[in-house]
Length: 520
Image (cartoon, rainbow, N blue to C red; front, side, top):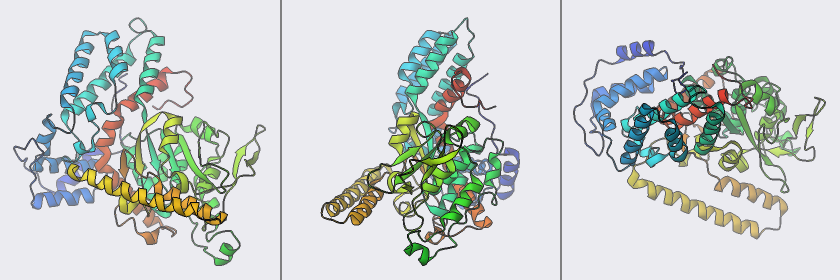
């Protein structure tokens, strides 16, 4: 078994290539490029390819047009030139040659030593976003060659028989190296109806075999994460159909319910919608049935509790669907929610009956610290749809010369907001106002992005759609936009998660204590 073999994808490349051929003619490659980056060229051919990418039916078609685009602009030549100041290419070249030499010699002990000692997800700054800006279909060939060599080496170590490498030593190496290397998580933000965008992100990642095992969601993101984490791979394609996810929670706005303390929305309709989409499983049951880890963030309704990130480690018997309901309980729209769990006898009971919980985005929209601590995650892919956050995020790679200035502006604004809210909290005697300011402070000072951040197009991020029940057509549009926003980042995600995915597949087969199902 080659543990590093590419997983089958859902895309059908031949049909996509045929579509591309119909939409644009064969394109000549542009010869020559600068070591500072590809020599860009404009013209009708590039415009045609841009249109194909914008309207592509699947990733294979998008990638075909993107590769042709890179041929025209000289980006292919840029990829083949190892030298650039954006990463330590000499270090990667040396490490690649060393691993190749030791592997060919069959020097198992030294291979294990060097992999355990020096394997790193951002070795020589190879995960630098600037390395994925010039070309649309990947990065430097040297980086790909290094990853190829690591994956090939891990696959060979995994496949060694007992006489060459004892099972005990093999398991110890893979456990320790995987723990040291870390893994990735997909975090889905809040955003009400705009959160359906997350479905497209998940579809794009899953179709390419790149969906992380660890998922986290807050507010609307908790619904999508809960749906995915409670359906196995056989059922997963069905959730992307426009009619599957049906969230009807906004139609019954009413001032009467608001003044009665029940919020503007209808909590019963929201509960019913979530229950239709999420099976009645506890966090532990969901993990054992699918092998996926779902995390749901919830915020306390009172000042004597702290935000929680619920998962099968710390809340194994809590029902996932109820946690998602609590995570969606935005103050003013829906009342706080009491969690439910399965007791020792298997009956449904209140979990922490004296505590109630509300929208997870208020305190932990992107709970990186909690996820890192509980699941050994050090790489975060964030799908962000919060309307108040989107204006400050971009799906484009900023010019390196502007990056420092942009970060300075954002950090200065954040510090000023934090200072103002702190002063207001210190000078108020009203408990209600103090609680409101505390929530505003949490919203304003959170981190909303990840190592890789995926955001909707401006068309999808229409504020008027945020609190409206989506039609099947709108759901399809959200899914399509999520896919198209993810496709330009696929190769970057593939590279940055490649080694951790190999570790995970190997450990699922080597570790008898691992309860997660082994994928085919």
